[in-house]
Image (cartoon, rainbow, N blue to C red; front, side, top):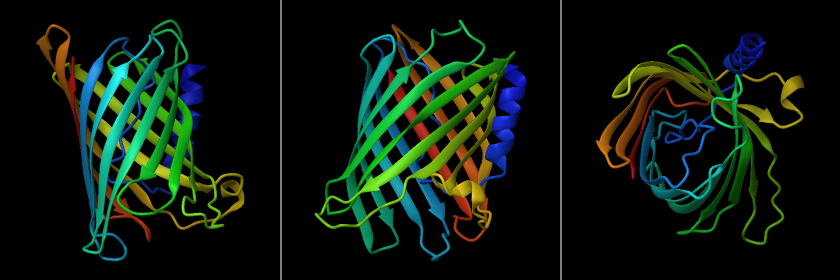
Length: 247
């Protein structure tokens, strides 16, 4: 049952149109109580269809407030070409919905609010379920997300709700070094993407992961991916990485 459900989900994701910010990362469904972390993320995509490069950098601080709730604040900078530069604040909350290891699939929920700081622009809200399962040393993740922007300048601009996804396959060779693949994407406007034919834009590639234990609950955790895009509305190449100091 677990295998069949995940195969259907991954088949659906693999056939979808892909859009992603260059510093996007795959959310995990589990929470570590009282864990603190300093989080650094970086991503750059080039060339984009308009010929420009987009680079995103963020720094955050997170805390496992309870056994089922992890909260994190980010400061993020997005640079596109030479004319677009915006600073944003982001508040992310993750909720673990099932006890770790008790069921065949781990289940979580992510909520995220993003607001521009340096200039006017829309707010962004994102939420959705997070799924994970294991087959021996193989770990599979699949997340389905809904994302919507809201005008913050008093205008009457209306933004559609977008359905997005993330997936990850990881082989746990050893704690310090693991390898696999990642993919990010979007299915289009919620409620309309099923009956809408779109040009395919895919971004997927190999990834590496690891966690270096330093003792006294301290560790350095990392992951990085090189994503290759093909289609009409996606960067041809994207490099993204995330480094965390946990304590």
